Image (cartoon, rainbow, N blue to C red):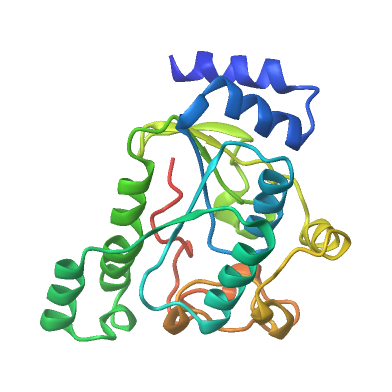
Length: 233
């Protein structure tokens, strides 16, 4: 069934621009289309497209409790510029309390398993709550962000969250993203100008050196696929 729906969406939107596809989805699925933003460059492009076209798409973000101040700054600037409500989802306080009481505040540095446990509590569980009852999930994923994302499709069925994921910027380059931001005066995280390409929680993100992989700054102390569990097929 999901393959049939995806093929239909691909056929109906084949000649559409990103803006036209967003408008089509908003109309076709009414109040069941959501966009998750972490206020990174890609997400800011999509926020701009949704806001300037006044599309009835719910925008939400996950506040893990350990974000950079610069992320909160661009969040605030985005609210001021677009006057569009952004839903905020937090991790369950009891789960965070239990994690810190049992393993301390920096357990994620000790093993991949511990890091994924922290990511689950702070990101995956709140995301599950945010996506519940929806049918289309819009993301800012790009294929060149990591090797693990090379085989993503523009429309795909997410078996983990049981809904269709739309990745409108999948084939965009980082240069195209930056050009859109510059040309349209889109607010962006100040850390991007300091070598932070992919930005997550403050303890888990560092700037990258010239020539390093885009995701090298995420969980830099471990060898893994550099994913937190949000984006799995």
